[in-house]
Length: 449
Image (tube, one colour):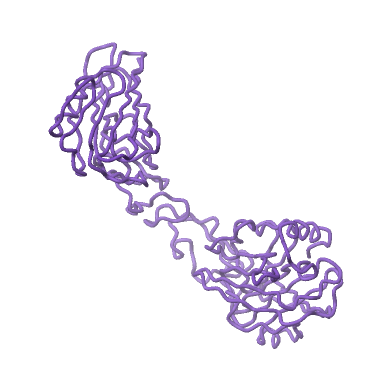
């Protein structure tokens, strides 16, 4: 049970952000939740706890329930309660829970509001302006919706066990635990402890397992690749199961066997190739082409007016598709050095326009009006760009007349020589037809011994 001291600390923090909330009703928190009991989803209750003496005026406050699919329902507490001593409970229970427990609730909770296994329940108070202030929330069963400042939802749910608050940090994962023997209590201080069947070694209604009895369930039967299934509080515990290897992406896996999550070499910025999945369910780009596209990344933002194309087998983009503008090559490495002359690296570099790049969110192909090599003087690169359409060239600047249409195109690869132990910085400026911002791109080529 949560201590009065920890409850007070939490409610003080909550009140610091609550404006216009009635003082009494704000001094109440969620205390215990049951969503199902021994296979009966109609046996449900939500228990609140008074944290400050005199907090009885809960009339008009609400319990709000959200399912994992986003379905939202609410129940408004219709009246105040009589006892406002610190630690007194306020019980909202379904009619079926009343039959099972024999306990008189303070409020009858309609059946079907509380998601029994995966969901979220919040306690909120009116703000005096027609809205509401959320004072406390519990998300459980791996709830997939947002949970805000209350943190990661509990992995477990309130089915065939209750969820009980044990401390008041305001973070669900730290504050709540599962209880096999629910202890609902009403405002008159009447309490009932429900007797669990968990632990008798047989599968009873509402139980997924019991001790070594699994009902035939295994990690594999539950969709995992391998591992040993555990049983915790008569619920199967898959925390020791391993999903990687079941040909289906789970959790934080990037891929799994043939399931690549829709990723391809091209989507990661390569000119082609075969994307693979490693034994650890990480995307493996080793089979992608050694030629890939490098967005220059200059201001005002990365876009797709112009993109570098580089061949560098040793520096392929990884699973995130990031291709650094600093490209390193070791002298004599055939994966990036296209000559056999010692003491230098010869990079194969091309310039591409209007490429549809999945890595660039703000990619808008436009007619290309001009391109210039800001530094250094490299006539071969300018000539390659000029060859893409009718154009004039002067002092490293190419002007297309008429502008190139939005069709994606690349120059022929140009040999760019960099002496060993040196770096060459290429800076370009690409403009589109009209008065939009220019695309400024850089590429640093480094040759190492």
